[in-house]
Image 1: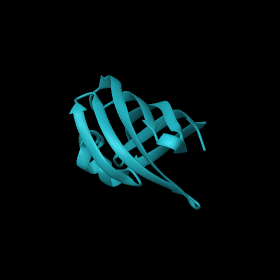
Image 2 (image 1 turned 45 degrees about the vertical axis):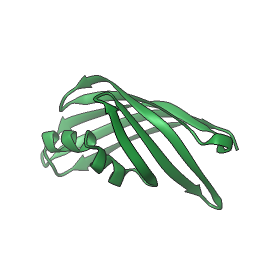
Image 3 (image 1 turned 90 degrees about the vertical axis):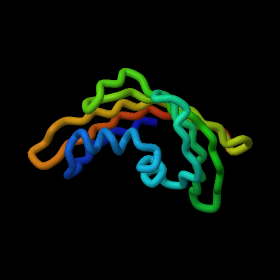
Length: 116
């Protein structure tokens, strides 16, 4: 599955970059996030509860950052396991560009899921 999108955010690029790299901000931004911890500057571990209709599953996974250009862009690889519920893995690229009012955040994501 591919997900692509852009969002105009009325904040400065340095503020957005700090937010993307702040695990407290990430925890509030990820739906169903139950736990998140920074292992290193390039690695984050999280536990997330997903609910789709009557189906619920907890996934534990990690996010690895690479190709980091502060205040501009980064790449991410993620993988998670939900036990019997299945797995999720993929990669994403985030780019920040100055806009008239704030910044334009662009994201391209390729993900795959499997299991029940």
